[in-house]
Image (cartoon, rainbow, N blue to C red; front, side, top):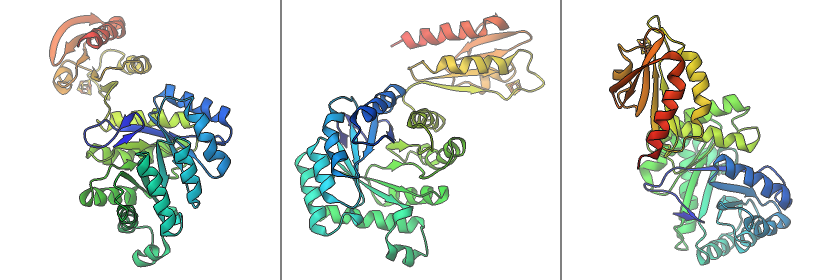
Length: 345
Ligand code: SF4
């Protein structure tokens, strides 16, 4: 699936999304926030279009940013039409609350004409009443059935440029719904856990929910919903992708918990090293291990690493020992080897 200049689905990397929290009609503030999100690594941005002024502002916003823009629409199909006209690269609707089928059809026609994909965004908080009654609440089956209904609605007009999200504030329900959906359908999935709360617990809930799905190979775009500055969502999403082994760039740092065998300042070294690795773009694994007994062996998959001795460490590369270095040279030597790997083709 193509969303502006970003491809998702299949073997494409998982794209990181966020959403602005400025009034969309305030073009200056919204563009400023999107540019910050871009610098942080955001790859797709969503803006709410709750009224005509906001939908119309999309044109001006779109001309000043560099990543695809998704318009978030509820209730009023005219806002979806206006957003597509204004250049939105994708729209997110809940076809169930857009109104009569003819209205959904108008939106589908407009999107088809401009090859604009539609995300069907099913949310536990706005599930159809009959499904809530049928399943006795927001269950994974109810979320999947709601998504399926909406897919059918769009397919009725031969529209298949669809991606889907099923989010709930319940982590388990979100995981099971996405697993069920992935067994049944082949549409790209936007994953995340909704209304997660304050930043730390929000990150943990999303890591548990979206992270589990990603580790199983499910999920094509991710948003970490945090009650915080949206830029924080990007850092969190990158960390989750890395932890789930789905990141296409950057360092996966592995380090041991230390034990009685540790005879060099490993904890301090990791504390200082981690922020320095944030700027490394190439995908690689760096290991900082406590001892030579298990170090190179435990971190055999690492591209580069150290295993501590008494006041010193041995540098190893892909399981092979390179040389011994004093403990105060661990960080500079590691960084210089990392840069060397970055320069390799
Ligand atoms: Fe202990 Fe060595 Fe394992 Fe670190 S790598 S936990 S120092 S045995």
